[in-house]
Length: 133
Image 1: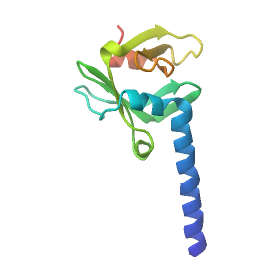
Image 2: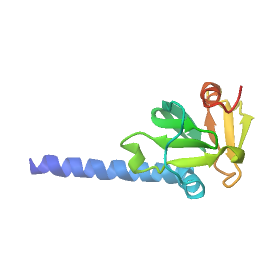
Image 3: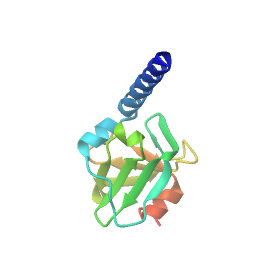
Image 4: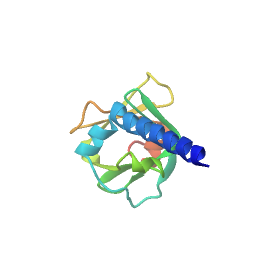
């Protein structure tokens, strides 16, 4: 019983380290310093979305996206939101470009306050958010 507890504690410690390292390596920490905010929005949130930040891909089922008239919101579902802070980016700070380097993530969003941390999302999600037509 005690050995099981030690195993679970070590496993949780290693998972926490991996998530914290992922937040730093992906640029999410930099984005959250520039655009910290609570996850909200007026539309129906897009849950289980995928995105690519720098060299890290957050594949389906961890991201949630939403939008209102002023902001685009990025957040993570439980338990990932314990390690990754939600961000709220003003729509006027976002520039959207085509990115053909990765076929699925064809829309690259760059941000005025944090230009070194682009987020790439699918065309479908960009349309669902109302960022492109």
